[in-house]
Image (cartoon, rainbow, N blue to C red; front, top):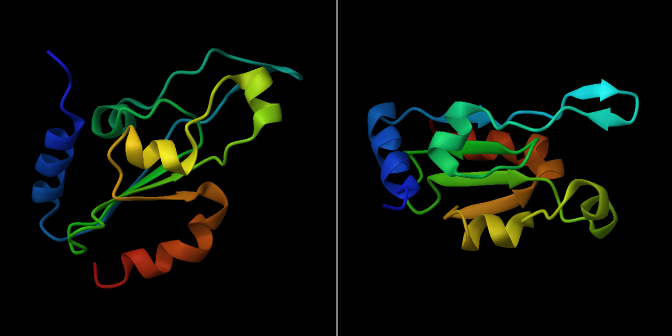
Length: 119
């Protein structure tokens, strides 16, 4: 039976009772100067999103119908993908993971206050 992340997100949004939640993904952990430990996603982030890339941030905004699930994800970078593997980017975050809106991670600081306004 496929995992229904959308159902999990809706249950979480309902439990928030109008409050916003910001949940960061796990980060890559350095093992040596040029080697990382194998990546393991943060359990809470994975449970709600299914998104298995480091450094992302999920916003859950029940006060914003139609934009209640927002992902900030690392931008696609073909050079980095050679070393670290495929990245979904903003288009994949929407198409494959059901985000209402996705932005490059670099825009988090600029856009976060607007998303949280009214929460």
